[in-house]
Amino acid sequence: MTASNTTKKRIIFCDFDGTITVNDNIVAIIRHFNPPGWEQIVEKIVSQQISIQEGVGHMFRLLPSSMQQEVVDYGISNARIREGFADLLAYCKEQDIEFYVTSGGIDFFVYPILAGFGIPEDHIYCNGSDFSGDAIEITWPHPCDEHCQNDCGMCKTTIMRRFPANEYERILIGDSVTDFEGAKLADLVFSRSILTDKCKELGLPHREFSDFHNVISGLEQSKS
Ligand code: MG
Ligand code: ZN
Image 1 (cartoon, helix red, strand yellow):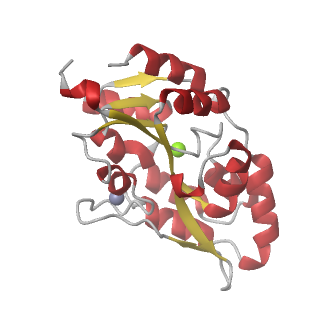
Image 2: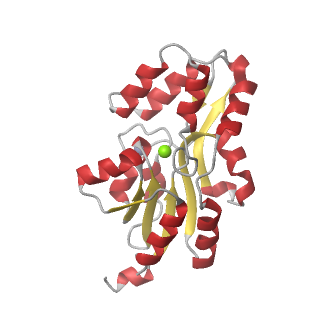
């Protein structure tokens, strides 16, 4: 433990789909409406043959804008919040840990699902949506900066870089492909699912979690 470490402010970048929520909402929506061809796109995203931005954009374009209401309603009603999330937010407030949601999800379900938790809107980053054309078009208000060539869509590393490593202890909580790049930048990773496999493969320090009470314990144990 270095002396400078003790002065760093803790900041959490928390994924949404499959992390705050139990399931991946994008996959759940697409699976529910089942437009032909979506499965191959998911496979290509997971195996990193195409970028997240390309894959997610393509999947939603398989759905007509006329389905807006059904898609939005399904996205919101289907989601279940992972155990302990409200307790983690309370813990962060008490410990003066900054908490950001960095989500590759879409605004039409991310904001409504998080509405009851008191997270300021400027601490929630996600993608946008446009239902004005024939097909659903995902918009990308938070693209990769010049340091990221990954076509993330919503670029977690771009946001993380705004909080320099010499001032912040950067903590990432996540589960999947959208977290791989951010995990490489983080001082501490809380992982589940394929993010755990990726951390093992890359030799990145990580703690596995299954609910947010595990994360609170891990934050307590790793206090500097
Ligand atoms: Mg996720
Ligand atoms: Zn990026």
